[in-house]
Picture (tube, rainbow, N blue to C red):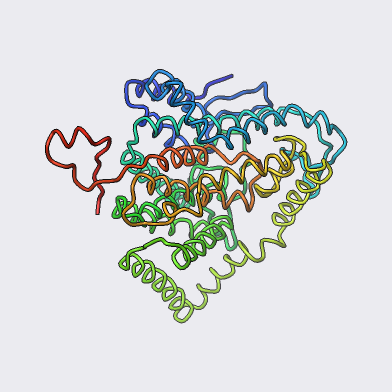
Length: 480
């Protein structure tokens, strides 16, 4: 194992934060997820695998929790119980990485995790490799993040610090996207290459007509867009519930703008699906959305449509140019080499599911294009039941607390994290290569379930008087 400069910086920050609260250390892990293509530690023995900054920071969080009240056996046991289905999914998935590739060795042909040829339909037989180990370890890292986040939030419930951290992270992510555009215009797009040191394939970011595809400091534009969609959804859910509405509302508008500029299929599909989901929730669920916010959403939508119509009427040439980019990124993507190859990967994942009689061939055995197909082909029926059961436990779609946006308690803050976790998975359901839902998903879900069971109200002003104040377990302000 060889620590990089970024790894040394993460370790230094972890040491400096050791005397802070466990929530601050959790926020540190969240911030480190911004560096999704940066190597903190190189592992040559596992085929040049890399450990990302967030995974390295997670070790500091786990150590901090174990030496704090959040690490009491009762607290950890409660966190594990709340996330039992996630624990079952990750542990079973990690076990399949070491068992199933040997059972089905050379019996089923799949698309390898790492491309071994330039052919669109390149396949190879199932065989145990370093990718099984790497994916299994990352899956257990996701579980550790889930349990640690739940333990921390159960112990301290500093939800305002979490909201402020998410807002700062969102602006940083937007800033990296703008920097990518500016540096490319200046002819120095390589200035951001210093952050792209992990062993991931970096793709050509030029779109139709020479338009630069925004990738920020991620390896490719789809990864940048997927990460941004999760942050946009979380800030939107905060804004709907009147949690720091001025801060989160500004972030939503800016993030939506930068995602629309990425020319990414992931961004356009994710934004479209989330918009449809939000409309359905407003119309058919007891959201109790204030009339003022409904009007704001309607005005923003109307202004967007009006801007598009004005562009078509007054500058048809530019409108046609952007229309062509949109078509190439969405409808016509299916018929491109990339779309054909992704469809093939998804089909081979389902072939693995059926050829293994619903058992799967082990996580890390193949590359998929779609989270559902990846889970099905890797862990089979058992993995699908555990994972989607866990999603239902996080989202609680048939409970009032999951939908209402007025008079919320800490359960409402937890619901916001739950919705963001699920919305953040939308890109993975479209093009996810691995059955691992990711560290961000685990952090959001652990936080959601810990707050959903809190049963405490958010108060606008702390009540006066020492006797009353002492009786309150939590008293925080809500920005209006």
